[in-house]
Image 1: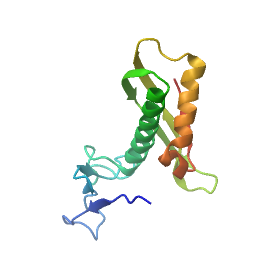
Image 2: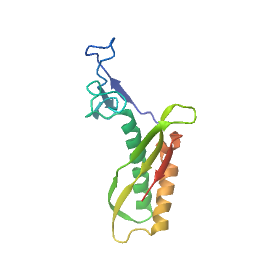
Image 3: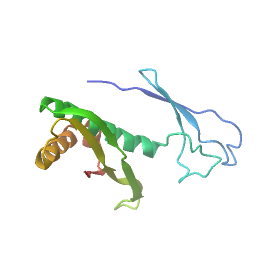
Image 4: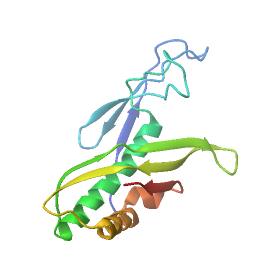
Length: 150
């Protein structure tokens, strides 16, 4: 079993007891990458949140998109396709679930893929996306609906 480590670190900058403290924090990963994080400005207003920081909701959407992409690339290569580029402007939709809890209810992936030579036909492309979705560890871990729009 693989283990994945992320360290989240926050430090008080004043205003904690009044609720006016900064939600900015640091995220570091076992490979050495560091990212500035924050609550979403849609949830906690600026200046208590940092719009330049990556919020947890964005990280979840990015994780689903990146996992799908990595499986798609692997499957496309195995199928003999030469992928030259992959871009996805993924979107997460937040709202209330059936229990009245706020959640990311839907993630929409919109991959734009370039191929050298002939791309797969529509059915072949849909099959690659379907299989990538089935294999994606993140998609398998979520109860959120994940849709691929091409």
